Length: 125
Image (cartoon, rainbow, N blue to C red; front, side, top):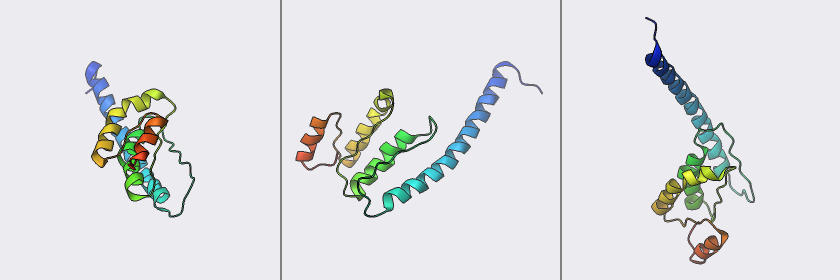
């Protein structure tokens, strides 16, 4: 039976979603392994970490939900600076970031002055 019209498009969309999910799972497993290696090593100071992956693979979400809480709770890190090449990416994730900060009792700041103020109260930022 030949698919036509909307049915053909929806079947292509489902096949695409399935393939992208498979790719994401492969990427996610590798990503978790590499992040675990980077974060678990002792005596690493003044390191600059860059996460590289295709668009829509969850780099920002993973950073907000897993990496930042880990850094602020399991290490002696007091400040995490999250940046992106486009301002809109972080604006989209601001609600999620604020939720995670409330959950773990971190300070959420947008300016350097706010960071200094929160650090005066000895809270992680």
